Image (cartoon, rainbow, N blue to C red; front, side):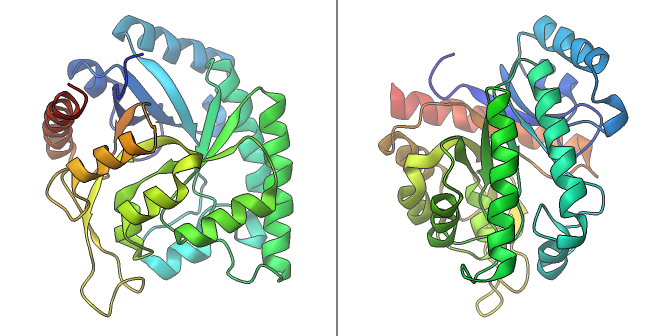
Length: 283
């Protein structure tokens, strides 16, 4: 795989990703996928999806978990419902993530990813310690499948994410860096954060966003926009990726599943932008 191979976030039958047909039509060689619904996380579905990928010349680089009951309606709702943080759903979601890891193995992929949720701030508190323990259990299962896990950025500051990774104490825990999420959640300057967590970055999203208004950051959402139209600064982002030694796929994510026509057009424009920047930076 060439350095900075273009990718896109897609799905089997669930999630916000584009349809695989879009990746094929645009000639995109790599994909991250959102794991399918439980009833289709089986060998037959894996074989069918792999066949489509082979026919299109597409490589799967990461499989993301997601859960029923998660909502990104606003920041407080996200904090209450997403990932392994909510206590009332934690055990069931832990079990589901182990199944997703097993499905990922059927796909021949060595990486699972997820939003773990808003990691509690108090490292001495029971909520934090129980989340650490739960994450260790998941990572041990993932390791048994010969895999690593990538936590997607956004819901914590770079400092707190590093603290959490340190406290979990597992060698197969890494980061999927999404610069737009830092802006959307108001958790920090994405370029500064990337420099800070760089040694753990093993996959990335290329997504753009604009900050919420002054005084509202971290309280109200920023706004996602087409790549190159937001506050990330894509050339600076790619040059920072180069500086930290990242040469993996540049996976485009455009979360407007309600408007598939615009989504496809924005992804096509993003492919052109990233291809031009890759040529400019790498030569």
